[in-house]
Image (cartoon, rainbow, N blue to C red; front, top):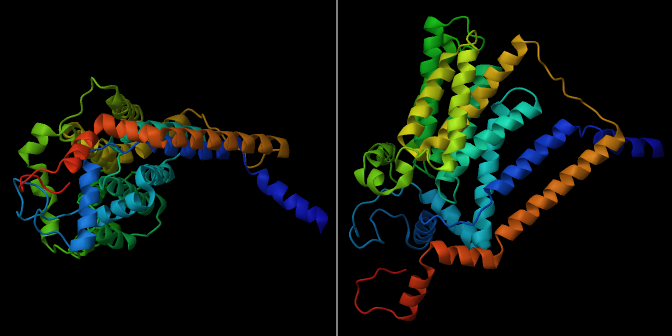
Length: 406
């Protein structure tokens, strides 16, 4: 009895190979990377809108601005705004940073699940994909869209590559997504890309390794239609479906908001995107014998979106990161280069791996706590946000009604 009791924890510990330890460390570091001071100016009107929705009910007309006060407003982010307000009330800036980092890490987890190859290959490409998408990460409703886009693509890739059918989840996810953020259009784009790609595969590329037969394509179309129907279940009804179209056509967005413009490759923050774009294109060209229309449609489509508007870079990262691993694995296999991961290690090595994981965990925690220290946050707020101006107005309230409530 005593020997069995002692041996069981040891046998479990010996499963902590360097590959498994590396996977844990990668996600710990991703979380630490994503945890940053929430200084995005959009965050605050989203929080205010969430508070207004909870205290006054659904917003159907603009209650905040001076120039458009009272004008019709389809507040497509109402659900995510309530979540943001709740996080802010409970955790303040620290809570917002952890919330954002959690969504970013969770999204990249599903990207990791889609990827192929050993831990080192998947980890390297995941870091590249995370560095690419990180320009998009901020505590705003779009972070939910980032996470859900990875989930939707994961379910589609499960169906295509693993023949695991969990498509019934998609209409449910889309119905929820439609009450959180207008980024639900990304989910429809992914479904449309897979459907179009599989139609091309059936017509022109029957020898593809992973192909969805015509019957499966029909099911995908049916699921997509159900997903569109699910999107109608929201406080704004059918109007919600049209929100993405007028949004992308608003000229002021391109004129005054950087993320709606093409990426500026002079800025180093866009270089990971450039590296991922070049990497996936070069790998696909080198791996000529492995061709899949679905991957081509998704990569080219999201690359076009990213090159048109920088805010779509994260969408491209979700798509391109796993596809890059498919081509690299194929190229390595053709050359007979394979690395078989260990399933168990000696107790001593396992303890060393555990110690390494603990050290990284402590280091990541220290980094997060240091960055989100109250004094650091306050200094960053005052440096980026009009904190002093708000304090002045509150201490010296203006007469009349020329200033909206702050």
